[in-house]
Image 1 (cartoon, one colour):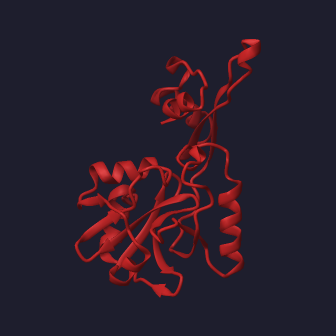
Image 2 (cartoon, helix red, strand yellow; image 1 turned 180 degrees about the horizontal axis):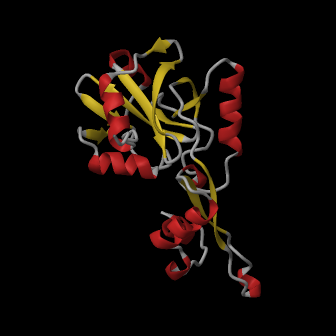
Length: 218
């Protein structure tokens, strides 16, 4: 995804400059004796001066588990043809503002909806809902950031998950919902606007499948 986004932005990045799994592991273990969230970053440099950009890694501790989140819907913060909508960049201003408005209203975060009142994504996480006929997530058709955990769930989850347009009205028939990204794993959604959800069995099972609890050695 990093190389694809860099190419879309016109940033020349030699794939050989991107750290591989062994290099990332050495970097993380040199910093701490526990698991970390590692992020790869790229700058554009100054092409006119023939100065290449910088490729670097940052790391942080895995955030404390979040029991659940309550979301407030809001119009998407970027127009349909805004490429930063689907690129993983540092262009977070609009999303941070949307989250702040949700916080001010007493919610944990913002859930974007498009002009047709279809659900898209949380400001920094992808959405999954359990409808009557199975799990669904809004399609990555230029409206949302296709997260890496979202892609992993679509490809490998132990239950079928499909991409489909999810109108806000479809929430009336939903029984479970969760959001996910590479930092938080799977976090149940217990409220969207005025509708509440239980933390369901399938959500708990998917969370355990994605990030198994440590086993105590006897």
